[in-house]
Length: 348
Image (cartoon, rainbow, N blue to C red; front, top):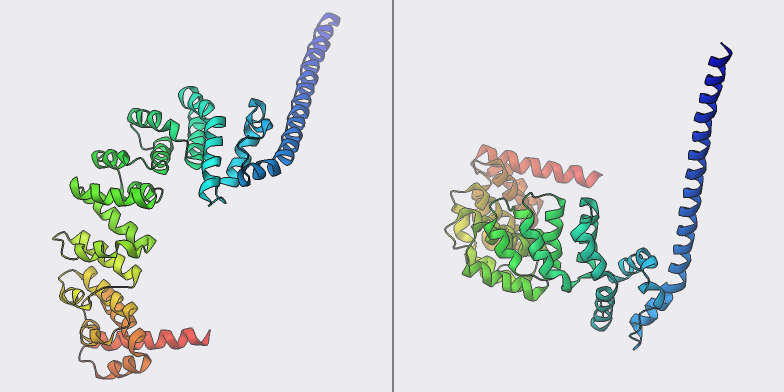
């Protein structure tokens, strides 16, 4: 019995000892982590102003502390906080050159041997810092990625940020590429590369790519490419024409008002709807008879767009007149709805 108690106490003591050792190790680790955080904070404070001076002067010597491997995370933080605020070409050149010298070798190693999460995180930094020296590696890396997960998405975005036009050809050949993938790429291209992408889309026609281009022009409201939208109004493909109309609606501009007239009688309700919306933002009275007719359209969305545009162009009195005198019952109801909604909105 006494022997059993001795074994019991020994077991309890050993377990307690292990717990104390584990607790001590955790405390030491936390102390080390806090100490490292304090050190990095001090390095950050000591070098932030020096780094800003480096960017704004003719000095091409990067602050020495930021080049040291132990301060790698501090350098990442300073660069990340700085790069989005820099617009000057000279400063951007210095910033990108410094980023190449500090980060490229380590990031290349992380892409080759790092875990999935490390690779994804690294790809975000490559995009932000625009490390052009890694473009070739990223192109080869992309070819190995088969599944559209975050790593593949971010590899595509990083290459787009480096203005790699070959990414368009890659998306064109990938049947699983979506409209959003193209939009992600276009949003990262500079103006010249996007212009080249438009030329490429004409040479190597891909419907998804072309739709994405029209959509992107509308989303960014880039008037420079407005003529492309007007050309696509003549496209035989319905989706192309709808995207072109949507883009013109967002731009609120059309060079020739007659271009819009055929769409008021389109067999596609989407085209009729957008013709109504465009006429509303153009604020042109010439479209009045078309809008009055479409106020009685069989599709609710078309009637709604026609009523809204009539209200924008001619005011509430026009809708009040049509609510009593239009030949179509649905048209009169839609006019009443918009008059009521306007009054309800004005009371709020």
